[in-house]
Length: 276
Image (cartoon, rainbow, N blue to C red; front, side):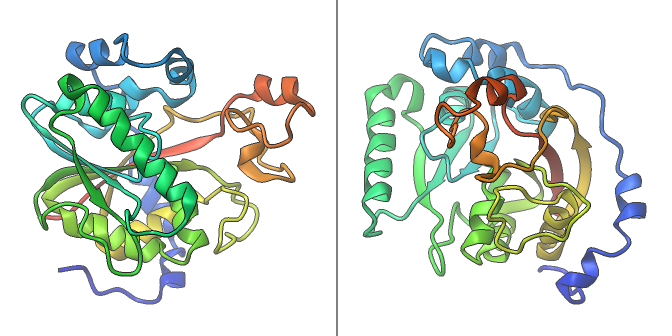
């Protein structure tokens, strides 16, 4: 059962004390088996090139990933993390890829789902144990059997859910999938704190305190924060939002060298736990 709490806006108050009490942990040791998967030849060079910004070994180790876990990744899109999670969990664990709705009419969704399915089918030796589920609003939210997952992971999705007015539903779905004591791992583009949060997150950036409030409203407890994916070069003031930066380069060739030098966005990395 989720906690009964006051209005959402009230959750944003008093975060200074609560956040100060949550210390970022020292770097966790990386499982050699995880490192081997990340270094594997099955990962395209373009995806490996992004490791310097996404830090998959350090991020997954911070979340506490183990090879025998039941893990849900929410909205895996093209499968950047699937290339790591699928093979790592295939033998002793379980990987759920909670993606888009196959009944959706949008062409880009159908194209994306087909590409993801083709990716899995091409390498059954790596992805044979993967189970595709759906997160689609308002009512397709069973991303795994209720109370079964050891870990749920979401990478840079909160702004998308906010844009559709579905952030609270998404956090509720993740809470429901986790077993008591399970972990929610969150990575998101980090907004500045000197302006109110745009409720639609049109720039792609989300205030860290706002994301924490969403998770706590669903019942999660913030356990730890990490600066693994921080980037102080990111000024977060681009006319076309976070997509101005690599890998999207929404401005095309305009100032591309400048944005390449900045690198990918500044991101917060948070670990929550579903209470026992």
